Image (tube, one colour):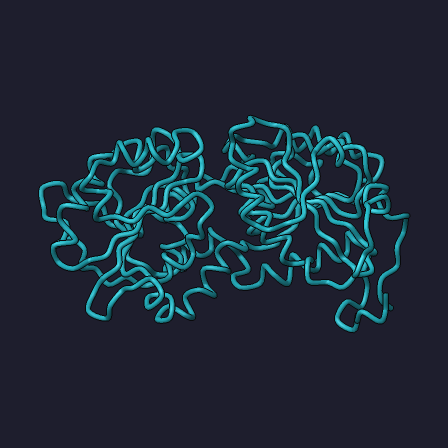
Length: 385
């Protein structure tokens, strides 16, 4: 059956200069609000960008000029268009991780908000965004079937629908692409360790810190120095991943200056936008906090060590499950003596990360195809165009 175009191509694409090599029948706009949000929407872009006739274009939403989104987009090698131009055009599908600013964009809309470890549905700033979702749906009331809110598990869908009955027809389970990518990386763990330069007789530890004053870096900055001082003496390799907002708000130079020469010498800090799934997959143990990445590591069965109690843990939440799963570090005992736990995957943690592990790519693709009005994609070829 192939592609059927329900409307003209976007004026922007039709008016673009030069000669098109590929026949474009659909144009998808991916909105990037922040570097962290950009990492989320890239997964959705991968679900459709390989389809014949589908062109994916990225844009940066209005926001602080120094949020490093422009650098992130350069690193993706993606085609980009200015927000001012995107706001004037019509697209076949708009994908975003946050409801902020996207309500006026024209085209079907796939929203992929984050679910915090407390179970809150949050925007790109980590703030509760149910009121913003309600406002966006009111803007789209004329054509409600063209808005989908994709969430990682059934509990999040139920919670959103309970908090906002108006979202009932829009919220669907699409899984967690970031977690599924980590599962894929685990299947090639030995190869990843070799590429990272980890020898067979070495352990690899990864330190994970989310953003904010309750994060590992915010509450326990001295722990970085202690880890750097204690562990490399036994041959351990150390990698650190900080939430993108840490680099954006403070700058890499300043963060590394605060870390000190010993930490800089013995701990490798991943750069802004650098993938974290491969290092976590390769790691032997994890030192983390209440952030999502620590939860992902726990869901794969990595030994997780926590420096502080998880703040404001909601009952029956992912954060609570991670706190029960992990082990809290004892400041009076040598770290090397504490990092000796052989863990197993926790069904309780996995269930709170996603209710459909390993299925996000297929579910995302299905929703995108429906919103794009593409049928029989499995038999679609370039000749269909």
